[in-house]
Image 1 (spheres, helix red, strand yellow):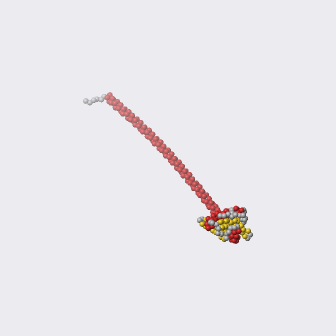
Image 2: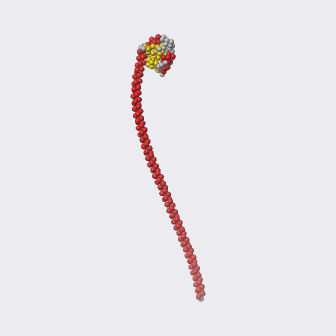
Image 3: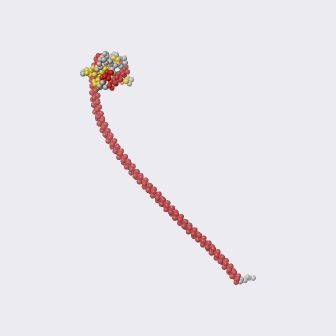
Length: 282
């Protein structure tokens, strides 16, 4: 049998359907509200993210600008340093060039001065050489004159009179030898005139001008005479000096040293020692 619905049942059913519809509408509103909230949150998050992205982009741009500015600053500093170094190198090159030119000029000046000094010295040397040659020529003339005078004195006066002069003083020489020379065992000697006999001899030193140094040198020769001339070892040896001119006081010095002094007197020569003179023996 079929059920019958009353108006009240229909109304209750309508009320229940209406309540379910309201519940569903409320649920739908709730869901819509939740969706709106989610959409709003998503929109806010998107806005936040966009703002963060913009901030990060701005920060990246700022850092890029700072890096670009730093790069420009460093590039400018490097360019300035490079310009400074180039300028310093150019200035140093200029200074070195100037120094090189100064040194070259100084070297040229010194070379010129040295060349001038060399020319002056060469001229001075030539003058000295000419003077020396003139002095040498005069000296040679003087030596030649002295040598000639010495030879004439020895040959014309001393040698011819020697034997008689010494015999008159009790020395029995009988012959003379001019320029007696020897050289043995490293010992060289020359005696201007030697008057000899078998057991006596007189060595004579002949000078144009007689000085103390000449006398001392002759005394040294007398001390070495028998060593230089060993064949006269056993003879009695006396010494004499003959001179045209003598230094002051030399006659007394010769006397004290035991030497005969032979001097020219007019056209002859004579022994200047007095009769009390005792000759030295070597």
